[in-house]
Length: 310
Image (cartoon, rainbow, N blue to C red):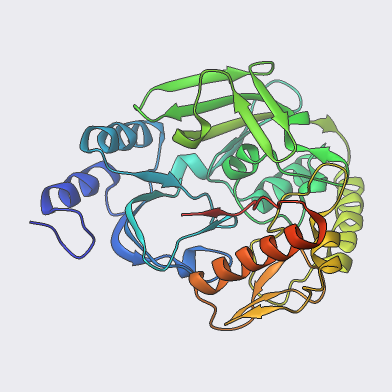
């Protein structure tokens, strides 16, 4: 017998057994998404360690349950009709930071907040990730998108990854086994859409906490001067096309301030779609499509969203 979540009681019991108390059913995802909008998921599961994550993915494969790892919800939007599968947030040991004996090495769980990693590196006097300040989300999601800013990207410092594939297998990847391009991270032989980044190892340069703090503040000031922060958003909504900027194209199409329901193209930065109050996922998707259509009409360029619509 199935419940409101679409999962039967046996499946719910199995998920509780796999993830303990850190699983919820038929849960509205708006509060777990930085856009503060979105429909329900059949389940939201929080595996605490590599063993739980591996077992969870193997179970989803066995039961043919769709799943998606959502990080900290900064680059996803669950459609209002909901997601009939398992959304995964890495927790416990998969969201911690530790140092190795080797100089400059920091290991962060895929579920660790970028802000927590940056604070740890500052306190430890390790430089190289300051450009990530102000980017919401988790380490795993940031690696998956090869997050970057100010001429730098995450893969510059990345040394090793622990990943779990859709069948529950654990793999160790080393520098040279992946390709990091603009908002793209690929590994030959792996479907990254069905792979979870459980842990990332970075090699950073020695510095002083004061110098790191100064650099971080400079980057943050530049980011705040250009980007809206007063309304919920997912950060940059569209990828920049080659040789141009999505924000410039959207502004050129006259779309700053354009609204659909509670969703709005930010008047401050055209590549931000913000929740101006009460926006639904449908509002946001309709506005996204309107922007794509108008930009294509005026420039011939098709904008690709950074945000994953689930």
